[in-house]
Length: 287
Image (cartoon, rainbow, N blue to C red; front, side, top):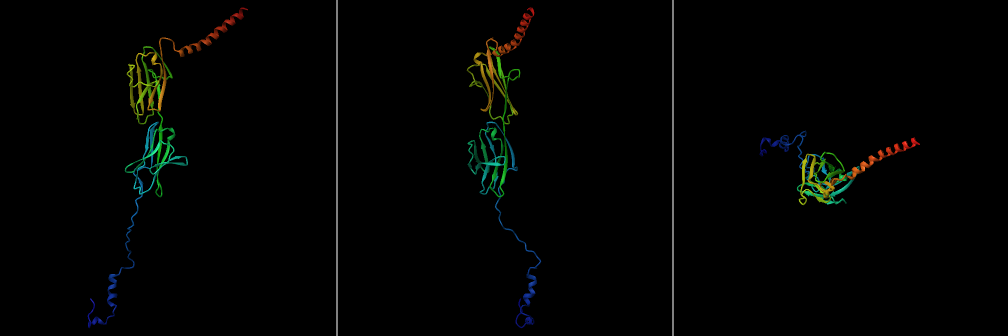
């Protein structure tokens, strides 16, 4: 309160009360003021998966997806590129495909998966691919694609490999198809005689196919009972449309196989030469 007129304090200087109250209301010079940052930062894009390098394996001739899941994209652009040495070839930009290879395309899956589709993968597709986000600095996810080429081998009933197999008429044709290096069997094995599929052939009768899909490999057995000359020809074991193996089968009606005839003729030639040499030697000695 200010002093009333006539009070003894009326003789004090006019600024006395202000100077008196200042020490209790002013902030000391050595006390730091607390500053609160109220700036709102824009969310930065990040990959939804915890890794930035992935390895993907696919079977020859299969369709394969390379996944790139991005959160908080905030208007940035996602691109897929193919790396060859130090060179990068643009495949997709946003949802548009710029590759001249029609097997490549971008398929976006909600909410955040910018996945690259490669159809009918072949050995040339193997290698590193990059998913890039146009942030600063850019985000990069590396996907290395491995294309596994299965190995096909056709064996006979003894487990031996041969490009040609001979059977007597009336016997049973037995062939085994062994396919290895199959990461994830996505199609079944078919047998063909020429262009005719045998798996579900009921017109001839006596045909049986048994197939076992095992971890990393497949085994298929073909049985044809009471073989006849019409069963002669090429037999092909197929996994999908790209993995094949072929053997030539001959069904003989009691005659000797041509290959055996050639082999016998080849063996007889050196023996005949020795006999002729001995005859000439005897004739010269008699003279």
